[in-house]
Length: 132
Picture 1 (cartoon, rainbow, N blue to C red):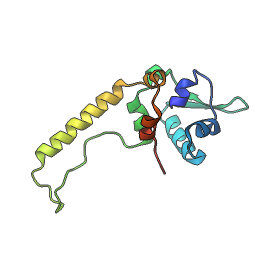
Picture 2: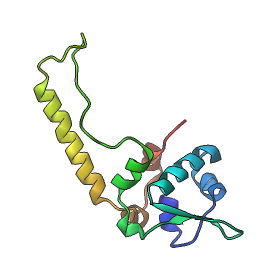
Picture 3: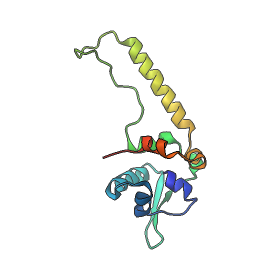
Picture 4: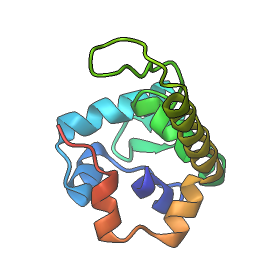
């Protein structure tokens, strides 16, 4: 998505993105389909075809991108003790919910444009990569 944000309205092929990001094409195809299904990207056929952003980078949040390609940051995960019981883990459950709330707010406040403008250092980019 950062590559598309930097493309400034130009379409990029999966091959171009895969080569630039060092990703397997098959893996990237799956991600692009998920992003397209979520309404974040559009595809164009033909010699000048490829993928582009469905709307301006300033209107696409990290929360939307991550929600399209992985499970959303939602509650519902139950904390259990080592024996598998639902022991009195209320404080831990509350802490985990606070972390989820913070992460949702932070991701909802960052846009693709923010990342494209500021750039992402290569060491941080590695932390954002998904591996098969």
